[in-house]
Amino acid sequence: MKKVELLSPAGNLEKLKIAFDYGADAVYGGVSHFSLRIRSGKEFTLESFKEGIDYAHARGKKVYVTINGFPFNSQLNLLKKHILNMAALEPDAFIVATPGVLVLAHELAPQIPLHLSTQANVMNYLDARVYYNMGARRIIAAREISLRDLMQIKEEIPELEIEVFVHGSMCFAYSGRCLISTLQSGRVPNRGSCANDCRFPYELYAANRETGTLFRLEEDPGIGTYIMNSKDLNLASHIKEIIDAGCIDSVKIEGRTKTNYYAAITARTYRWAIDDYYAGKNDPDAYQKELHTMQNRGFTDAYLVNRPFERHDTQSLDFTMQMGTDQVSGMVTEAGTHFMCKYKTLPGDKVEIVTPIGSVIEAVDNEIGTILNENGTWYVTFKKLLAENGKEWESVHSGNVNPFTLPATLPSYTFLRIPVNDEMNLIPKL
Image (cartoon, rainbow, N blue to C red; front, side):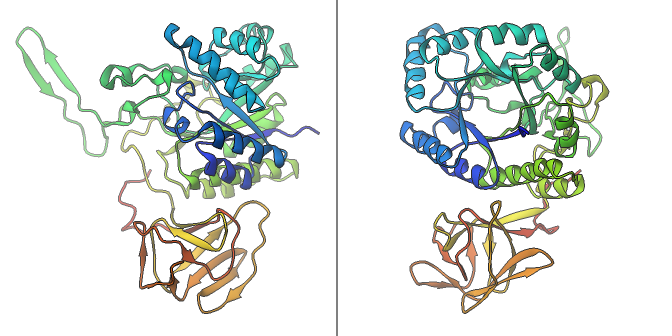
């Protein structure tokens, strides 16, 4: 049986490794401004991106290159060079957004499979067939499409792979076709430099041109002014429906510019949900509990299993971001012997250990601290905070860049986390 693919974001080499270690089958990422995330594109060099591809292939995983920007005429020669440079790295596919770039990539690198970006807004089998005939082997469906429509596309074009977003940021505009950032700050969303203007709070005014008067519209307390701020997509509770539909080849997580912890927890949770499905199990409450440990804008299951006109709760009107239920206090280094502080750590604190898929931990009790399992969850408690340079600290805070010694070696990129208390959670929750 061919299982559905889990596709995670890779904003840099470290996130790429984390995504794979926590369960992703494939990742997507890019180099340069031809990728629709300029900030994450700058995190990769040709050399580090090649290292990521080699890392993936050595583990039987895949890397898809994002070349999904909208180029101007003046950029086409540079784009041709970029396509050839990317093809030389031997990735598993190119993700492109426009018919012209699709044709160009097929001409210059016919050996590289082509995936059509969600920016192309495929909503029906007629458009899907056009792109398939042009060389696209997979479409990344528009976020506005329904599962029923995707089933019909698969019926019409069985050979075409279909990929859908299941988690991450949502755009208030139609499939990301927004110009607000361009108008307000000159940063063009469809060329990868969106300033997220929809996340800002806005004040509303009523103007009378004849009299020159301007009135500020007062709002009831608690209603908020985040009028264009979409909640985050979360379809973990619908994985069974999605796979049962029989038309989805890959489920995709958004978020190349998000944190290492986000890369880990999203991959780990959706891997859990997918594996549960094939084992005949389903535990939506457990998946949601884990996903809610992360910062979010509130969650919505959006439009894949519901029509847009049926949903009136996809906006987060009161805030742009809220704390999750947990705070990351540290991340274990790649070597596994030390951790980097991400919040604060004090001797005697009991800290939960979150490890990559398939990790094995052993109980330890020594002069540095203890590692114990309580009811299926592993915890570390530090007796002393000893830096790599030998200095002992009374407390460690996020600004401290020293690696600190662990009681025992833990898997690379293990996370340490603590529950959020009321004092920490200053941003209102739903």
